[in-house]
Image (cartoon, rainbow, N blue to C red; front, top):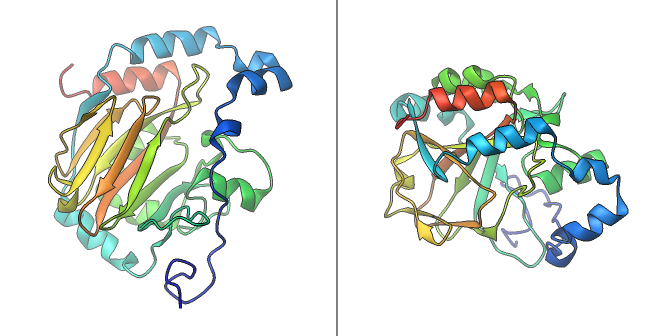
Length: 253
């Protein structure tokens, strides 16, 4: 049995085709082929992006999570992690769980955008994932930060095991992006010697239990040297109110 083609219960995994970078990155052609106004930033976009640009690309926030408390709460889901975006012809040791999904989603739905789009048969926006799952409700150790920014967009836990990685990429680099991202590191196996997050040409220091505003529009990649490197990815709707909230919880304001 090829463990890369089946889940933990032996069920076949629906593999996603390899990414077509020429097609995905052709913003000019997308602009030509669509309603051009949706590619043009609004005054709200511009003022939010200008204010966010005053922050570092890796900005520590005031939140500090109790890793022991989180570990006790996530233990109930030890056997429930699902493969994260398995692509054809690619071996990658990553799993995930969903905290904020589409209405009706459970903890094992709506992880990566390509998987969610295929499941729903249409294009989706990060803000469409606005329904808390049971996992969200169970992880009260994360509620102080998550509840502060509600309503949220697509939010998930990613568990990268030894050898797992994300290739160099940018997330929604347009000024018209609908969300910005907060990333929190929730296991000891995310400390600097165990897990690497490289962005804008340098490796960034990680403190387990800390949350960061991360400008994921910049090219970034990750790699795990140990099992159970768990991090939380939060898509926060890009509104002026949420930008002001973010500014209020930066560690070095």
